[in-house]
Image 1 (cartoon, one colour):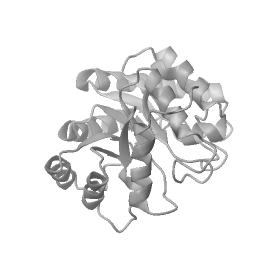
Image 2: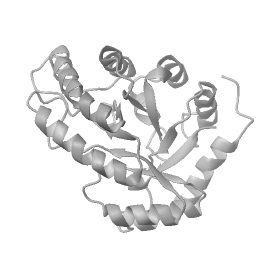
Image 3: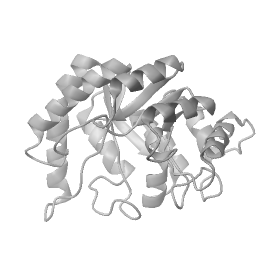
Length: 261
C-alpha cells in the first residue's frame, strides 16, 4: 500500500517545535515527514532530528517572493527555486511543492495560463541542474481558497502535458479535488502518470481519514494498483486525539481487505 508522509504543519499544535513533531511521528510508527515553507525552520536542527530518528523528509514547499501567475515573477521564481534547491539537497529531498497563486483580477484564464507556462519553463534549467521534481498543486475554490487560480485536475494536467518535462508533475490533494470535482478514484487512474505526490484528508472538515464521505481504504488500494511508489502526505487537522488519528491512518494502508474498485 502507499507510503505515508506526515505533514508536520497540521499536527500537534503551533506550540510544538518541528523537531518534537518529528519525534512524535516516529513514535507513531512513521519514517517520513513533510512540511510547507522552509524559511521559518531551523534546517540544521530539523536535519539532525530526522537523521537521529532514522527518518527522512519526503517533500516541502518551494519558496518565492512572487507566484507563478505573476508575469513579472520570473527572476524571483528562479532565485527562490535555487535557494530552495540548496535546502532540498541538505535534507536529501528529491521533489518540491509549488502552488500557483490566486486569480489576477480581470484577467482571462488562458492569459494567466500562458504566464504560468512561461514561468515554469524558466524553472526547467534549475530542475535539470539539480535533478529535482516540481509538483504543482491545484486547490479547491469552494471551501478553502476561493480565488485560487488552478483548481481542477484536467486543467493542471494540461499544463504538465504541454510542458512535457519529466520533472514537472502534479500534487493531487484528494481532499481538495473531492470538494472541487469528486470522482477521485477515476481521476487518479486517468492522471497517475502526471502525479508526483498526493495529499489526503477527510471530507468534510479536513479531519481524520475515517468517518467522512471518502473511503480511504479503497482510495489507497486504487493508488497502489497504479504502481505509484512515491508518498501520500497526511495533511489534515485531527478533530480528536492526534496520535490516534495517525495510528488510524497507518492501519488504513496496512489493510488488505479493501473493497474492490
